[in-house]
Length: 335
Ligand code: P6P
Image (cartoon, rainbow, N blue to C red):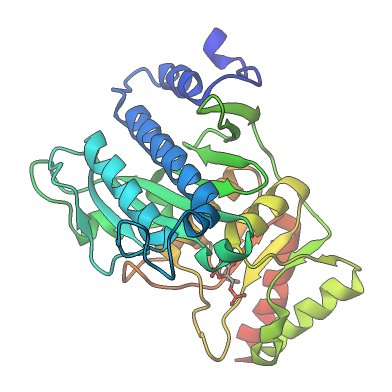
């Protein structure tokens, strides 16, 4: 029937969400509404980002604006916007955010969903106009409705994600997400305030010739990691590292490649966060035919112990990730 047809490029995000909901006979529309709430917040954040340089010119001296208000950092503003949109949307009971040490209770005790979010990753890149991103995961709560969400709701393995996505605020603003039935990309048209389907059914190449990691840390790499980087060079791969996770991931997703943030002596669990960075991108890359692990264990099967725990990340084209895992296995054998 018409639902099963791939929706045409140019379909709006709203219509896409509605059509996809029709594919789920028992869907009650809460997840659809939640996705719309997130899309609304991204439109607001997108506008704040595009004006960020101008706020300074428009009269904010030092870090105070003309109203004498403390000029807030964009990641703080983004955090406030996403929490407000999710609270007002009513579908989410609890949020974990990169910006908040503790769980955030929205007050929606009937909400069936929990969201883990990095509202604005790589915000140090804003001042130099490098692409930045929002990353989010959506879980169904496991505790009964009628109460606040709890740790059990928030510390589920990535395999329990019902949806995951990211927004890249780059040369154009795009939202890429999955609900477990493939990955679709939407490009934002600011003059219309709409996201339009621009990249239907994204699949990532099985292999690639791009490797992304910060070789500035190479004196901290393990022998196995050093050996794998040498392998990439022998293969003649291109080194591409923007230093903004969403931008590096998105380029590799479309072109093929591998992104690595490995364990280093300084950071034995790497730098990136399992709950609101790695799991979301792992769900997306697997749905696009790629692979994600910590060098050994599938990212989405890592048992979270804390909301802000870090994990090494090897993510991208399946053949590249598997080759990297072969090198890293030598380390375990040697250990
Ligand atoms: P490094 C940005 O701060 C971030 O969280 C990711 O967006 C990015 O990929 C990584 O850290 C860059 O880290 O240590 O290479 O500067």
